[in-house]
Amino acid sequence: MTLETKEALENLTSSFENFKAANDQRLKELEEKGTVDVLTGEKLDRMNNDLDRLQQKMNRLYSSSRRPSLTGEDDGVRDRETKTAFYDGFIRKGQMQGLEEKALNSLSGEDGGYAIPQELDRELEKRLRLLSPIRADAKVVNIGSSRYKKLVNVGGIASGWVAETGARSETDAPKLAEIDPPLGELYANPAATQVMLDDAHFDVEQWLGEELAEEFAIQENAAFVNGDGLNKPKGFLTYSMSANDDGSRSFGEIQAISTGVDGDWAAADPADILIDLVHSMKAGYRSGAKFYLNTGLVAEIRKFRDQDGNYLWRPGLESGAASSLLGYPVVEVADMPDRAAGSLSIAFANMRRAYTVTDRMGTKILRDPYSHKPYIHFYTTKRVGGAVTNDQAIKLLQFAA
Image (cartoon, rainbow, N blue to C red; front, side):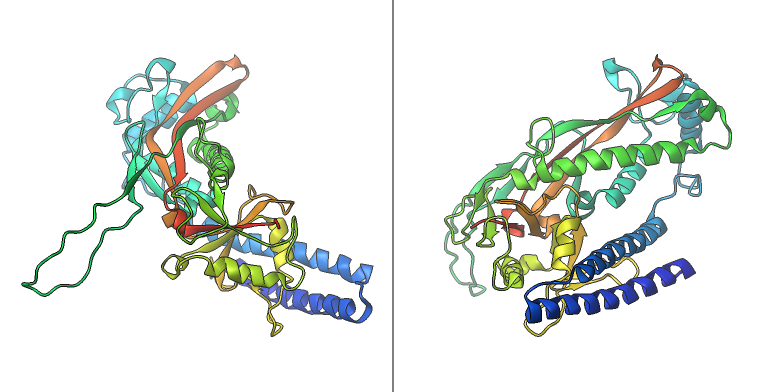
């Protein structure tokens, strides 16, 4: 553990203890006076913001230690000639001679440009996993065609125990459903000046990898949550919902647990509904499950305590550990909606079993030095799909009566 990480960990631990003391004071004032002093509320808000900042710093320090290098430290594995031809030739100078011979994936066809080398495509995917919280936890499948179909058994097959020489009864025929995650073309268009590209000290590989990963991550994560499935992935919040899980729920519907109050938590004990949400999922799926919600709701839930006075939320104090709620990791997703009337603002999911991301290999780049002089644009596209492939492994909390 580095000195900076150790210091960040100590600050996070100390801040959480101070936060608990301040929140206990708030609850005491509420119980004794029926109201909370303005200064106490403002102090708690500041401490809440500090906790967010410190937790994010811990996460950044851990992510930076895992981030793949794109600066030539792993050249023993890479094809150096491919790298030189692509970055020093095509990206910096627009030279395309010989690119076909340097093991690129393929030409991009009639739209012009070239597909990036396969190794760099894989490095881009690693960066996206660090920046996109849903992709990081979902099952990612690389495909070479425009479609990916998966058959899912929704009825079950009869089975049992028999003796070694006993008669075997005929099993029921399986009931299968086909899942076809919709794909769409995702694009980014980073730009640089020729002066930047001509600078020998300008790390064009690092710059391009970071620009593409950041732009792609923002767009695809929004689609994984709220995408309508039209030329983009289908987000898990856009499926049909059902309040039941007793056999009446249709395949493809996701169970939504209601708080009982439109746009708010239950009046009695808001922690109870979170416990109900966890236990609405079958035990076999709960191992590996996480909470997915935005920062605003994290700030609210951070103040919740159980009947014994213990806080439900815990900060992630170990290197790389996420904060936890009821013992399950908490993942902050900016695209999850704020609490509002009827909103589906919290997901509890084993995302690897619930959601599948499909990546079509072959990210393509078109170098455009003409349209926006003096800037050179690098119009980059990749095909990404996504869909819920197991509705049993995800549950949603809806703020509704």
